[in-house]
Amino acid sequence: MTNPHYTVIGAASTRAGRPLWMLEELGVPYEHISSKPHGDEVTRHYPRGKVPVLLVDGEPITDSTAIIQYLADAHGQFTAPAGTLARARQDAMTHCILDEFDAVLWTAARHSFILPEERRVAGVKESLRWEFERNQASFAQRLGDSPFVTGDAFTVPDIVLTHCLIWARAAKFEITEPVLQAYFDRMRQRPALGRALSKGKA
View 1 (cartoon, rainbow, N blue to C red):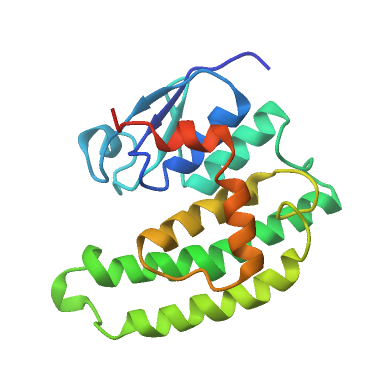
View 2 (cartoon, rainbow, N blue to C red; view 1 turned 30 degrees about the vertical axis):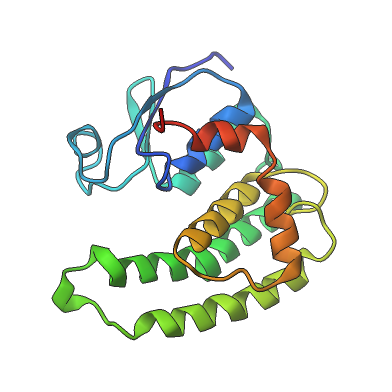
């Protein structure tokens, strides 16, 4: 494919870290605008104000998972081909991670500092911690001895899962499964992840 101009909008500490990591893995050039949610750079492309936004030759794509899957498809790396059983299994794992990890952490964040204070439920986080621990146990069984989420190859769901584990640690949600902790330790050694997370820290 021809090389489009990519711009990632969103701080690396948010879900924008996911497309930043994918672009670093792909080794393609891009611009990064470290904007907070609802910043002017975000809302001019996405009125809802959520990050990240990826501009592809000026055209916006939103939602971190949609963005990284687009990039993987566009460059033919880190994904099974569309229309294959391998892709269906990959997508199933991606959606499982979004349902069982991302959604739990997002709900905890909403009831910690995102929702108006009068709409927050103080006790919900303990229930979410229990759910997060339970979901780890079932996911660890699915992961087994595989080095990556879908087997022997690094793919889109590895970015989503590792980012969720980084998020969990920051939110003080314990990683209780040794299989997941070992997986997390391996993923954190990837140089592209280190480069992505360093964006905006200088």
